Length: 463
Image 1 (spheres, rainbow, N blue to C red):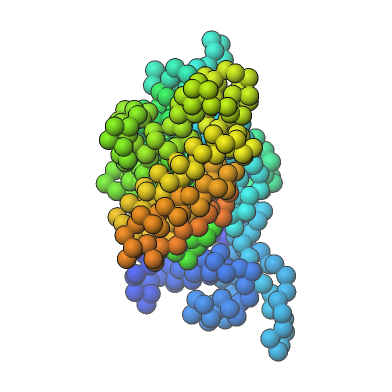
Image 2 (cartoon, one colour; image 1 turned 120 degrees about the vertical axis):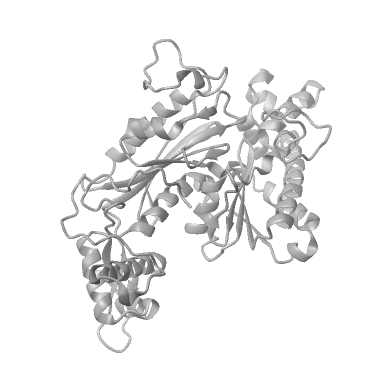
Protein backbone atom coordinates (compact mmCIF):
# COMPACT_ATOMS: atom_id res chain seq x y z
CA UNK A 1 0.00 0.00 0.00
CA UNK A 2 1.41 3.37 -1.01
CA UNK A 3 2.44 6.22 1.22
CA UNK A 4 0.61 9.52 0.90
CA UNK A 5 3.51 11.63 2.07
CA UNK A 6 4.75 13.23 5.27
CA UNK A 7 2.49 16.26 5.27
CA UNK A 8 0.01 15.42 8.03
CA UNK A 9 -2.51 17.38 10.02
CA UNK A 10 -2.93 17.18 13.77
CA UNK A 11 -5.78 15.44 15.53
CA UNK A 12 -9.07 17.23 15.08
CA UNK A 13 -10.34 19.29 17.99
CA UNK A 14 -13.69 18.78 19.62
CA UNK A 15 -16.13 20.73 17.48
CA UNK A 16 -17.66 22.77 20.30
CA UNK A 17 -14.37 24.16 21.64
CA UNK A 18 -13.79 27.89 21.44
CA UNK A 19 -11.77 28.30 18.25
CA UNK A 20 -9.97 31.32 19.68
CA UNK A 21 -8.33 29.10 22.33
CA UNK A 22 -7.16 26.43 19.88
CA UNK A 23 -3.57 26.00 18.82
CA UNK A 24 -2.93 27.12 15.21
CA UNK A 25 -2.43 23.54 14.03
CA UNK A 26 -5.80 22.57 15.52
CA UNK A 27 -7.49 25.47 13.78
CA UNK A 28 -5.96 24.37 10.47
CA UNK A 29 -7.14 20.81 11.03
CA UNK A 30 -10.61 22.03 11.95
CA UNK A 31 -10.76 24.15 8.80
CA UNK A 32 -9.43 21.37 6.58
CA UNK A 33 -12.03 18.98 7.94
CA UNK A 34 -14.78 21.52 7.26
CA UNK A 35 -13.63 21.92 3.67
CA UNK A 36 -13.23 18.16 3.17
CA UNK A 37 -16.74 17.40 4.41
CA UNK A 38 -18.17 20.24 2.34
CA UNK A 39 -16.55 18.74 -0.76
CA UNK A 40 -17.99 15.36 0.26
CA UNK A 41 -21.50 16.75 0.42
CA UNK A 42 -21.51 19.20 -2.48
CA UNK A 43 -18.66 18.26 -4.82
CA UNK A 44 -17.67 18.89 -7.51
CA UNK A 45 -17.59 22.37 -6.02
CA UNK A 46 -15.61 25.58 -6.57
CA UNK A 47 -13.50 27.29 -3.91
CA UNK A 48 -15.80 30.32 -3.87
CA UNK A 49 -18.74 28.06 -3.00
CA UNK A 50 -16.68 26.27 -0.36
CA UNK A 51 -15.95 29.66 1.19
CA UNK A 52 -19.61 30.58 1.17
CA UNK A 53 -20.76 27.28 2.66
CA UNK A 54 -18.08 26.97 5.36
CA UNK A 55 -17.75 30.65 6.29
CA UNK A 56 -13.98 30.45 5.78
CA UNK A 57 -12.06 33.11 3.87
CA UNK A 58 -11.14 32.37 0.25
CA UNK A 59 -7.44 32.33 1.20
CA UNK A 60 -8.09 29.76 3.95
CA UNK A 61 -10.15 27.61 1.59
CA UNK A 62 -7.40 27.70 -1.03
CA UNK A 63 -4.80 26.65 1.56
CA UNK A 64 -7.05 23.79 2.73
CA UNK A 65 -7.62 22.59 -0.82
CA UNK A 66 -3.87 22.55 -1.48
CA UNK A 67 -3.26 20.57 1.68
CA UNK A 68 -6.08 18.11 0.95
CA UNK A 69 -4.71 17.62 -2.57
CA UNK A 70 -1.26 16.88 -1.16
CA UNK A 71 -2.83 14.26 1.10
CA UNK A 72 -4.65 12.76 -1.91
CA UNK A 73 -8.00 13.30 -0.20
CA UNK A 74 -9.39 15.58 -2.92
CA UNK A 75 -8.64 16.11 -6.59
CA UNK A 76 -9.50 18.61 -9.26
CA UNK A 77 -12.58 17.70 -11.25
CA UNK A 78 -12.37 20.11 -14.16
CA UNK A 79 -13.43 23.68 -14.73
CA UNK A 80 -16.81 25.13 -13.84
CA UNK A 81 -18.94 27.61 -15.71
CA UNK A 82 -17.98 31.27 -15.85
CA UNK A 83 -19.60 33.65 -13.38
CA UNK A 84 -18.28 36.77 -15.05
CA UNK A 85 -14.59 36.22 -14.43
CA UNK A 86 -12.10 33.38 -14.59
CA UNK A 87 -13.79 30.00 -14.73
CA UNK A 88 -13.38 28.23 -11.37
CA UNK A 89 -11.54 24.98 -10.67
CA UNK A 90 -13.88 22.35 -9.22
CA UNK A 91 -12.88 19.94 -6.45
CA UNK A 92 -14.17 16.47 -5.67
CA UNK A 93 -13.14 13.63 -3.38
CA UNK A 94 -10.18 11.56 -4.54
CA UNK A 95 -11.14 8.32 -6.24
CA UNK A 96 -7.73 6.72 -6.39
CA UNK A 97 -6.14 6.49 -2.93
CA UNK A 98 -8.57 5.65 -0.13
CA UNK A 99 -11.06 2.78 -0.07
CA UNK A 100 -13.60 1.27 2.32
CA UNK A 101 -14.40 -2.45 2.18
CA UNK A 102 -17.47 -4.37 3.26
CA UNK A 103 -18.76 -7.93 3.27
CA UNK A 104 -22.46 -8.76 3.61
CA UNK A 105 -22.95 -12.35 4.77
CA UNK A 106 -26.48 -13.14 3.66
CA UNK A 107 -28.47 -16.32 4.06
CA UNK A 108 -27.95 -17.35 0.44
CA UNK A 109 -25.33 -14.98 -0.98
CA UNK A 110 -22.26 -13.16 0.33
CA UNK A 111 -21.40 -9.82 -1.32
CA UNK A 112 -18.10 -7.95 -0.97
CA UNK A 113 -17.60 -4.35 -2.09
CA UNK A 114 -14.78 -1.83 -2.32
CA UNK A 115 -15.86 1.80 -2.54
CA UNK A 116 -13.91 5.03 -2.90
CA UNK A 117 -14.31 8.12 -0.70
CA UNK A 118 -17.41 9.20 -2.61
CA UNK A 119 -19.13 5.87 -2.02
CA UNK A 120 -18.83 4.78 -5.64
CA UNK A 121 -18.33 1.04 -6.06
CA UNK A 122 -14.88 0.23 -7.46
CA UNK A 123 -14.99 -3.56 -7.16
CA UNK A 124 -17.67 -6.11 -6.38
CA UNK A 125 -17.46 -9.85 -5.75
CA UNK A 126 -20.10 -12.40 -4.80
CA UNK A 127 -20.11 -16.00 -3.69
CA UNK A 128 -22.80 -18.41 -2.52
CA UNK A 129 -23.05 -18.46 1.23
CA UNK A 130 -22.06 -22.03 2.20
CA UNK A 131 -25.04 -24.09 3.24
CA UNK A 132 -23.46 -27.02 5.04
CA UNK A 133 -20.79 -27.98 7.50
CA UNK A 134 -17.25 -27.98 6.11
CA UNK A 135 -16.16 -31.39 4.96
CA UNK A 136 -13.28 -33.18 6.65
CA UNK A 137 -10.01 -31.73 5.41
CA UNK A 138 -11.54 -28.55 3.97
CA UNK A 139 -8.97 -25.73 4.31
CA UNK A 140 -10.13 -23.17 6.83
CA UNK A 141 -8.77 -20.63 9.23
CA UNK A 142 -7.66 -21.72 12.64
CA UNK A 143 -9.82 -19.58 14.88
CA UNK A 144 -10.82 -19.94 18.50
CA UNK A 145 -14.25 -21.17 19.49
CA UNK A 146 -14.57 -23.72 16.74
CA UNK A 147 -17.33 -25.49 18.61
CA UNK A 148 -19.50 -22.38 18.25
CA UNK A 149 -19.11 -22.46 14.53
CA UNK A 150 -20.80 -25.43 12.98
CA UNK A 151 -24.57 -25.61 12.76
CA UNK A 152 -26.22 -28.62 11.17
CA UNK A 153 -27.39 -27.72 7.71
CA UNK A 154 -26.17 -24.11 8.02
CA UNK A 155 -23.16 -21.90 7.54
CA UNK A 156 -20.45 -22.26 10.17
CA UNK A 157 -18.78 -19.04 11.28
CA UNK A 158 -15.34 -20.53 10.53
CA UNK A 159 -16.42 -20.89 6.92
CA UNK A 160 -17.75 -17.33 6.95
CA UNK A 161 -14.41 -16.00 8.14
CA UNK A 162 -12.58 -17.90 5.42
CA UNK A 163 -15.00 -16.72 2.75
CA UNK A 164 -14.80 -13.09 3.91
CA UNK A 165 -11.00 -13.18 4.01
CA UNK A 166 -10.82 -14.72 0.53
CA UNK A 167 -13.21 -12.16 -0.99
CA UNK A 168 -11.49 -9.22 0.69
CA UNK A 169 -8.09 -10.41 -0.50
CA UNK A 170 -9.38 -10.58 -4.05
CA UNK A 171 -10.97 -7.13 -3.73
CA UNK A 172 -7.76 -5.54 -2.48
CA UNK A 173 -5.86 -7.11 -5.37
CA UNK A 174 -8.10 -5.13 -7.75
CA UNK A 175 -7.29 -1.77 -6.12
CA UNK A 176 -4.48 0.49 -7.37
CA UNK A 177 -1.01 -0.01 -5.86
CA UNK A 178 -1.18 3.21 -3.83
CA UNK A 179 -4.52 2.27 -2.24
CA UNK A 180 -5.01 2.73 1.49
CA UNK A 181 -7.70 0.53 3.04
CA UNK A 182 -9.64 2.53 5.61
CA UNK A 183 -11.30 -0.46 7.26
CA UNK A 184 -13.82 -3.26 6.85
CA UNK A 185 -17.39 -3.70 8.04
CA UNK A 186 -18.91 -7.18 7.91
CA UNK A 187 -22.70 -7.39 8.15
CA UNK A 188 -24.80 -10.31 9.32
CA UNK A 189 -28.55 -10.99 9.58
CA UNK A 190 -29.14 -10.85 13.31
CA UNK A 191 -28.52 -8.84 16.47
CA UNK A 192 -24.93 -7.82 17.08
CA UNK A 193 -23.16 -6.55 20.19
CA UNK A 194 -21.45 -3.73 18.36
CA UNK A 195 -19.15 -2.90 21.29
CA UNK A 196 -17.40 -6.28 21.02
CA UNK A 197 -18.30 -7.31 17.48
CA UNK A 198 -20.04 -10.44 18.73
CA UNK A 199 -22.94 -11.95 16.78
CA UNK A 200 -25.43 -12.59 19.56
CA UNK A 201 -27.79 -14.80 17.58
CA UNK A 202 -28.69 -15.18 13.92
CA UNK A 203 -31.96 -17.11 13.62
CA UNK A 204 -31.51 -17.85 9.92
CA UNK A 205 -27.84 -18.90 10.11
CA UNK A 206 -27.93 -22.01 12.30
CA UNK A 207 -25.06 -22.31 14.73
CA UNK A 208 -24.48 -18.56 14.98
CA UNK A 209 -24.81 -17.71 18.66
CA UNK A 210 -22.27 -15.80 20.72
CA UNK A 211 -19.79 -15.77 17.83
CA UNK A 212 -16.81 -13.38 18.37
CA UNK A 213 -16.68 -12.49 14.70
CA UNK A 214 -14.78 -9.22 14.99
CA UNK A 215 -11.72 -10.61 16.80
CA UNK A 216 -11.57 -13.53 14.36
CA UNK A 217 -11.69 -11.30 11.30
CA UNK A 218 -9.36 -8.67 12.75
CA UNK A 219 -6.73 -11.31 13.46
CA UNK A 220 -7.15 -12.88 10.02
CA UNK A 221 -7.17 -9.61 8.05
CA UNK A 222 -4.79 -7.38 9.97
CA UNK A 223 -7.17 -4.49 9.25
CA UNK A 224 -9.54 -2.36 11.32
CA UNK A 225 -12.78 -4.35 11.33
CA UNK A 226 -16.28 -3.95 12.72
CA UNK A 227 -19.43 -6.09 12.72
CA UNK A 228 -22.86 -4.65 12.00
CA UNK A 229 -26.45 -5.82 11.70
CA UNK A 230 -27.55 -5.95 8.06
CA UNK A 231 -30.65 -3.75 8.41
CA UNK A 232 -28.72 -1.11 10.38
CA UNK A 233 -26.17 -0.98 7.59
CA UNK A 234 -28.87 -0.62 4.95
CA UNK A 235 -30.47 2.23 6.89
CA UNK A 236 -27.13 4.02 7.04
CA UNK A 237 -26.56 3.43 3.33
CA UNK A 238 -29.73 5.34 2.51
CA UNK A 239 -28.80 8.06 5.01
CA UNK A 240 -25.28 8.50 3.60
CA UNK A 241 -25.67 7.65 -0.08
CA UNK A 242 -29.35 7.23 -0.97
CA UNK A 243 -32.81 8.75 -0.65
CA UNK A 244 -32.31 9.66 3.02
CA UNK A 245 -29.36 12.03 2.62
CA UNK A 246 -31.31 14.99 3.96
CA UNK A 247 -33.43 12.95 6.39
CA UNK A 248 -32.65 12.80 10.11
CA UNK A 249 -35.35 10.27 11.06
CA UNK A 250 -35.50 7.24 8.82
CA UNK A 251 -36.71 3.64 8.99
CA UNK A 252 -35.29 1.02 6.63
CA UNK A 253 -37.27 -2.22 6.28
CA UNK A 254 -35.14 -5.03 4.90
CA UNK A 255 -36.92 -7.95 3.23
CA UNK A 256 -34.50 -10.70 2.33
CA UNK A 257 -34.81 -14.27 3.54
CA UNK A 258 -35.92 -12.69 6.83
CA UNK A 259 -37.36 -9.32 7.80
CA UNK A 260 -35.51 -6.68 9.78
CA UNK A 261 -35.35 -2.94 10.23
CA UNK A 262 -32.78 -0.26 10.89
CA UNK A 263 -33.50 3.10 12.47
CA UNK A 264 -31.85 6.48 12.04
CA UNK A 265 -32.98 8.91 14.75
CA UNK A 266 -31.84 12.53 14.84
CA UNK A 267 -29.25 11.73 12.19
CA UNK A 268 -27.66 8.79 14.02
CA UNK A 269 -28.22 5.05 14.02
CA UNK A 270 -30.56 4.16 16.88
CA UNK A 271 -29.36 1.04 18.66
CA UNK A 272 -31.12 0.80 21.99
CA UNK A 273 -29.58 -0.33 25.27
CA UNK A 274 -27.56 -3.27 23.88
CA UNK A 275 -27.32 -2.23 20.27
CA UNK A 276 -30.05 -4.60 19.10
CA UNK A 277 -32.97 -2.26 18.37
CA UNK A 278 -35.05 -2.73 15.23
CA UNK A 279 -35.85 -6.47 15.30
CA UNK A 280 -39.06 -5.93 13.37
CA UNK A 281 -39.19 -9.54 12.23
CA UNK A 282 -39.62 -10.77 15.79
CA UNK A 283 -42.67 -8.85 16.89
CA UNK A 284 -45.65 -11.17 17.38
CA UNK A 285 -48.37 -10.81 14.75
CA UNK A 286 -50.22 -14.11 15.30
CA UNK A 287 -50.76 -15.46 18.81
CA UNK A 288 -51.40 -18.95 17.39
CA UNK A 289 -48.80 -18.68 14.64
CA UNK A 290 -46.02 -21.05 13.62
CA UNK A 291 -42.74 -21.44 15.48
CA UNK A 292 -40.07 -18.99 14.37
CA UNK A 293 -36.39 -19.80 13.98
CA UNK A 294 -35.80 -17.52 16.98
CA UNK A 295 -37.73 -19.98 19.17
CA UNK A 296 -40.84 -17.85 19.64
CA UNK A 297 -44.24 -18.35 17.99
CA UNK A 298 -46.18 -16.15 15.60
CA UNK A 299 -43.32 -13.75 14.76
CA UNK A 300 -43.71 -11.56 11.69
CA UNK A 301 -40.72 -13.40 10.21
CA UNK A 302 -42.38 -16.81 10.69
CA UNK A 303 -45.62 -15.61 9.14
CA UNK A 304 -44.49 -13.25 6.37
CA UNK A 305 -40.76 -13.40 5.71
CA UNK A 306 -39.71 -15.48 2.69
CA UNK A 307 -38.05 -18.00 4.99
CA UNK A 308 -41.40 -18.41 6.74
CA UNK A 309 -43.36 -18.58 3.48
CA UNK A 310 -41.49 -21.66 2.29
CA UNK A 311 -43.34 -24.12 4.61
CA UNK A 312 -46.62 -22.50 3.58
CA UNK A 313 -45.76 -22.99 -0.09
CA UNK A 314 -44.81 -26.63 0.44
CA UNK A 315 -48.10 -27.31 2.27
CA UNK A 316 -50.14 -25.81 -0.57
CA UNK A 317 -48.26 -27.80 -3.21
CA UNK A 318 -48.77 -31.02 -1.27
CA UNK A 319 -52.49 -30.26 -1.17
CA UNK A 320 -52.43 -30.34 -4.96
CA UNK A 321 -51.96 -26.65 -5.73
CA UNK A 322 -49.96 -26.41 -8.98
CA UNK A 323 -46.86 -24.24 -8.78
CA UNK A 324 -43.79 -23.37 -10.77
CA UNK A 325 -41.84 -23.90 -7.55
CA UNK A 326 -42.33 -27.67 -7.81
CA UNK A 327 -41.04 -27.58 -11.38
CA UNK A 328 -37.94 -25.54 -10.45
CA UNK A 329 -36.90 -28.14 -7.84
CA UNK A 330 -38.00 -31.05 -10.10
CA UNK A 331 -40.48 -32.33 -7.55
CA UNK A 332 -38.05 -32.30 -4.60
CA UNK A 333 -40.19 -30.11 -2.39
CA UNK A 334 -37.63 -30.15 0.41
CA UNK A 335 -35.37 -28.15 -1.91
CA UNK A 336 -37.75 -25.19 -2.04
CA UNK A 337 -36.11 -22.21 -0.33
CA UNK A 338 -36.55 -18.41 -0.45
CA UNK A 339 -34.59 -18.20 -3.71
CA UNK A 340 -36.94 -20.67 -5.38
CA UNK A 341 -39.93 -18.74 -4.07
CA UNK A 342 -38.52 -15.51 -5.49
CA UNK A 343 -37.70 -17.07 -8.86
CA UNK A 344 -41.25 -18.40 -9.14
CA UNK A 345 -42.77 -15.05 -8.16
CA UNK A 346 -40.69 -13.25 -10.80
CA UNK A 347 -42.12 -15.74 -13.32
CA UNK A 348 -45.61 -14.79 -12.07
CA UNK A 349 -46.36 -18.16 -10.51
CA UNK A 350 -49.83 -17.60 -8.94
CA UNK A 351 -49.03 -19.36 -5.65
CA UNK A 352 -45.74 -17.55 -5.13
CA UNK A 353 -47.28 -14.19 -6.08
CA UNK A 354 -50.22 -14.75 -3.73
CA UNK A 355 -47.98 -15.69 -0.82
CA UNK A 356 -45.72 -12.67 -1.27
CA UNK A 357 -48.60 -10.25 -1.65
CA UNK A 358 -50.17 -11.55 1.57
CA UNK A 359 -46.76 -11.32 3.22
CA UNK A 360 -46.51 -7.71 2.08
CA UNK A 361 -49.71 -6.90 3.92
CA UNK A 362 -48.41 -8.49 7.11
CA UNK A 363 -45.12 -6.63 6.79
CA UNK A 364 -47.12 -3.44 6.24
CA UNK A 365 -48.84 -4.01 9.60
CA UNK A 366 -45.40 -4.27 11.19
CA UNK A 367 -44.28 -1.08 9.46
CA UNK A 368 -47.42 0.68 10.73
CA UNK A 369 -46.44 -0.25 14.27
CA UNK A 370 -42.96 1.18 13.69
CA UNK A 371 -44.48 4.41 12.35
CA UNK A 372 -46.61 4.70 15.49
CA UNK A 373 -43.64 4.02 17.78
CA UNK A 374 -40.87 6.05 16.14
CA UNK A 375 -42.59 8.64 13.95
CA UNK A 376 -40.03 8.55 11.09
CA UNK A 377 -40.01 11.10 8.29
CA UNK A 378 -39.09 8.48 5.72
CA UNK A 379 -39.64 4.72 5.45
CA UNK A 380 -37.48 2.91 2.89
CA UNK A 381 -38.42 -0.60 1.76
CA UNK A 382 -35.49 -2.61 0.39
CA UNK A 383 -33.74 -5.93 0.10
CA UNK A 384 -33.56 -8.60 -2.57
CA UNK A 385 -37.26 -9.41 -2.56
CA UNK A 386 -38.75 -5.93 -3.09
CA UNK A 387 -36.03 -5.25 -5.67
CA UNK A 388 -36.67 -8.37 -7.75
CA UNK A 389 -40.44 -8.56 -7.14
CA UNK A 390 -41.75 -4.97 -7.31
CA UNK A 391 -45.34 -6.02 -6.44
CA UNK A 392 -44.20 -6.41 -2.83
CA UNK A 393 -43.61 -2.69 -2.28
CA UNK A 394 -47.18 -1.43 -2.91
CA UNK A 395 -48.62 -4.18 -0.71
CA UNK A 396 -46.36 -3.08 2.17
CA UNK A 397 -46.81 0.66 1.60
CA UNK A 398 -50.59 0.65 1.21
CA UNK A 399 -51.12 -1.47 4.32
CA UNK A 400 -48.71 0.60 6.40
CA UNK A 401 -50.44 3.85 5.42
CA UNK A 402 -53.87 2.37 6.12
CA UNK A 403 -52.97 0.79 9.48
CA UNK A 404 -50.75 3.48 11.01
CA UNK A 405 -52.15 6.13 13.33
CA UNK A 406 -53.38 8.63 10.78
CA UNK A 407 -51.98 11.67 12.53
CA UNK A 408 -48.54 10.13 12.01
CA UNK A 409 -49.02 8.28 8.72
CA UNK A 410 -49.75 11.48 6.81
CA UNK A 411 -46.29 12.83 7.50
CA UNK A 412 -44.43 9.61 6.74
CA UNK A 413 -43.24 9.05 3.19
CA UNK A 414 -42.78 5.42 2.10
CA UNK A 415 -40.41 4.80 -0.81
CA UNK A 416 -38.49 1.88 -2.36
CA UNK A 417 -34.76 1.70 -1.75
CA UNK A 418 -32.64 3.69 -4.18
CA UNK A 419 -29.64 1.37 -3.74
CA UNK A 420 -30.97 -1.97 -4.94
CA UNK A 421 -29.89 -5.35 -3.60
CA UNK A 422 -26.45 -4.08 -2.49
CA UNK A 423 -27.87 -1.62 0.07
CA UNK A 424 -26.53 -3.65 3.00
CA UNK A 425 -23.00 -3.98 1.63
CA UNK A 426 -22.98 -0.30 0.64
CA UNK A 427 -24.08 0.57 4.16
CA UNK A 428 -21.17 -1.33 5.64
CA UNK A 429 -18.74 0.63 3.48
CA UNK A 430 -20.58 3.89 4.27
CA UNK A 431 -20.08 3.25 8.00
CA UNK A 432 -16.33 3.00 7.40
CA UNK A 433 -16.45 6.26 5.42
CA UNK A 434 -18.52 7.98 8.10
CA UNK A 435 -15.92 7.08 10.72
CA UNK A 436 -13.11 8.26 8.45
CA UNK A 437 -14.71 11.63 7.73
CA UNK A 438 -15.31 12.19 11.44
CA UNK A 439 -11.59 11.71 12.11
CA UNK A 440 -9.96 12.89 8.89
CA UNK A 441 -7.77 14.49 7.88
CA UNK A 442 -4.67 13.11 9.51
CA UNK A 443 -5.74 12.19 13.03
CA UNK A 444 -2.75 10.45 14.57
CA UNK A 445 -5.06 8.04 16.33
CA UNK A 446 -7.26 7.60 13.33
CA UNK A 447 -7.01 7.81 9.62
CA UNK A 448 -3.52 6.46 9.01
CA UNK A 449 -2.63 8.95 6.30
CA UNK A 450 1.01 7.93 6.46
CA UNK A 451 0.09 4.98 4.24
CA UNK A 452 -0.63 2.51 7.04
CA UNK A 453 -3.81 0.52 7.23
CA UNK A 454 -5.93 3.51 8.21
CA UNK A 455 -8.40 3.71 11.09
CA UNK A 456 -7.38 3.03 14.66
CA UNK A 457 -8.84 -0.33 15.61
CA UNK A 458 -9.88 0.35 19.16
CA UNK A 459 -12.92 -1.15 20.81
CA UNK A 460 -14.91 1.94 19.89
CA UNK A 461 -17.97 1.12 17.79
CA UNK A 462 -19.84 3.27 15.30
CA UNK A 463 -22.07 5.81 16.99
